[in-house]
Amino acid sequence: MNKHLLTLLLVGATTCCFATNHLINISGFSFSPATVNAAVGDTVTWNVTGPHTATQVSQATWNANGNTPLSGGFDFTPANTSNGTSFIVCTSVGTIWYVCKPHASMGMKGQINVVATGLPDLVNNVAWSIYPNPVKDVLHLNSNASASTVDVEIINMLGKVVMQTTAVPFGKAASIDVSSLTKGVYFLKSSENKMRPVRFVKL
Image (cartoon, rainbow, N blue to C red; front, side):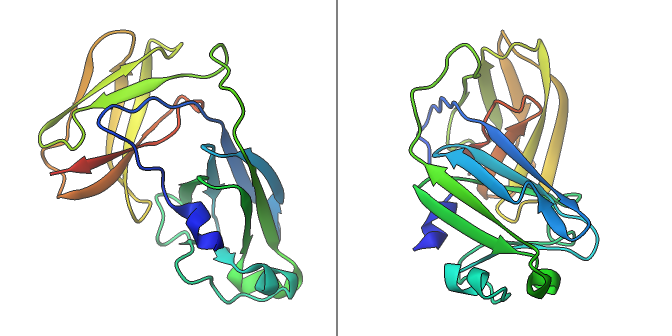
């Protein structure tokens, strides 16, 4: 089922990632770009603004310009995302269909075509790891990011930013105090677009 495409990538105690981030904006009454070609492991980020949504639907609903949400799918609105921005990680091959609920009948819709990932390009991509995972107090980070520092956001399962840390140093040991977070599953997202969001569990 398409909803399985949205399963956020589960990672082990130490995570190393290579991916591309695809950004989708809203232009008038259309998504830009309306079609995204992504690989397994890529991130797709929406900037949802105004009266618009990005709501996953079935292919049949998409073809009919309908707006019935897919059970278990995403439904991003400016109200339930962080500053209108939210993302998914593509984890399976297939097509993700989505619409703007208020304007689906006008043809405001988009699709994400997910193909199998190729060999990672170690020159143009950035690897990073976190530990321990699960974590109770302090999360440690390692990376070979080209930037000396990056800004880091911690995002909950609803797509909301619950913590922001600026100028996290890379190329040497770095850490983030997450002791104030409630127990649950979170994602670490960096300002370095080539660094895919990484899942961790707060104990």
